Amino acid sequence: MKLTRDSKIKDLYKTAIGQDVVDKILMQMNKSDKWITNPLVSNLKISALNLYIKDEGFLDALLDLINSETELGVQEGGTLTKQWWKEVVFYQIYPRSFKDSNGDGLGDLQGIISKLDYLKELGIGGLWLSPIFKSPMKDNGYDISDYYEVNPEMGTMDDLKELIDQAHKRDIRVIMDLVVNHTSDEHPWFQEALHDPNSDKRDYYFFRKKEETNNWVSFFFESAWRYFKEQDIYALKLFAKEQIDLNWDNPKVRDEVVKIINFYGDLGIDGLRLDVINYISKKEGLPQGNQWVGDLMEFTGIEHYFYGPHLNEYLAEINSRGFAPNHMFSIGETPGIGIQLGKLLSADYRKQLDLLFTFDHLETPGHVRFDEYLYDLNFYKEHMMKVLGSNSLHDWTSLFFENHDNPRMISKVNPDPMVHDVLGKALNVILLTLQGTPFIYQGQEAGFINQEFTEEDLRDVESINKLKVSDMKTVLAGTRDHARTTMKWSDEGGFSESEGWIKSQHESVASIESQLEDSMSVLSFTKQLISFRNNTDDLIYAPIQFIHPKTRNYFAYKRGDYFIEINLSDKDINRPKSNDVLGLLLSNYKGQVLGSLRPYEANIYRIL
Ligand code: NOJ
Image (cartoon, rainbow, N blue to C red):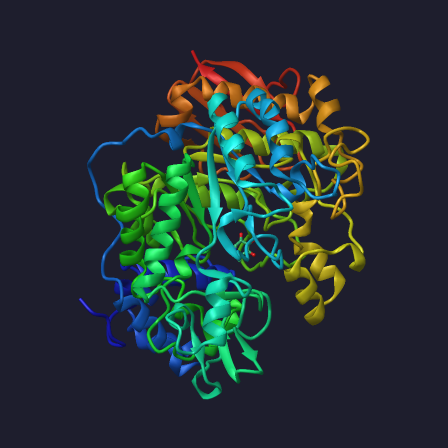
């Protein structure tokens, strides 16, 4: 049934897109969903929303989007299928900052190979490498100029083969980052397309004359259109000006993508993480973005491509022609996708993507990454109860707090050095015991934190652009460089023999080497946790049951024979009584205090 302005608000909330979009808007406005689900509001006509949102075009944009997806991502019954990627603990490597083997200050593949034993000892079963392809590095490899070559600063194809081989010998799977929403402007396809309007590459991208461009805004705070003076033509680019969007409506582009997937399948890669993959289908005609949505989401035009008209179809195509025949795992990075739409993209029976990285848990309501604020873990608890509570046997969730695009979680929650260790350990307890596949970002196993940067220290294109439109305080709150500091392997640094391309991890955090020797360190604790998870089937497949879900600051759940509880605050809290007899197995504190939990205390028990 198509919705119109006369349909009820409650009908809107029953559709996948309606629910996700409204939830996102409410979250940005810092309003609870009761605002829309209470009977007074839910029985109103959709047109009544204009009382609150004084923008005529908004309702049309919303209805258009909602009517484009009438399915709901729910299929009851079935069975839970076991998969290797549900069982392993993944570790994300940002290659440029991980380990330099040849002394040029830039991390490389041989550096990663030299640390495989460390990763094995940590208990890691899967590696995700951020991009290692040939690239002018305008966005550190997320701007690829050759999909079949390794970036010379990182090594060669032979190094990559050796890395895959050495990882597999240690029973570690390898997934790579594939960026195919856009290519670098130095990619030969783009060069040919730009310089020869008659080339068949012209239609690989979106070239437009000035009057055909629109008001879309790029994610790096500029117009989404780059002007090429010599040719007097514009090209669409949703990210940096050197990252030009590919036109997936052209079947030749999809053939190219399938070819790349098959190539890496043949090479022995176990899977791919697909960068901003939900942006690949843009609405025909590239219409103007709605200003109200644009102001709210910061990015004008987003409603026309975050869940575009052919997204499901294109994902199914690369799955059937690429991933499935090679038995490769796929995880899509899908910014802006909420719970319901997420199911439509990744439920197993849909045969599109295996897993998603969504981001709604990363900022608390009313906040964006560049706001300076303290993250309340109670929001994470509520959000995850909603996500995991709505999963059917067909759905699976990726678990992560950090990646190369976000500040360090310890710093976001509570930068007080007094709680550093207990908090770092508590976050890793949550990550490794909830139901889903955990992704540890390099350094998180050892409690890495944000760094202090001056303007000159900044390296990231996003931060540098952001600094043009806001102050340093704002940039520091959200800069992606916090995550990209070089690994602190030893007390001297241990990343490279020369100076690294970016600052190292904060000096107050103990190095990997010294934490390995300290049985009480965050790293030693995380190692124990991973080993426990790897050897405990219940922590992987047992359903999750939340206990005392409404008690603030208290996060507790059962996984089969295990009971996990965490104090989400920096204060002592009362420990709710449990009906079970519990035997303590792992804790971030020594001993227990009867009836209470200390700041960020996290305990794992066996139910006796
Ligand atoms: C998402 C990646 O994670 C980010 O690092 C990159 O800048 C954008 N996609 C553009 O590729």
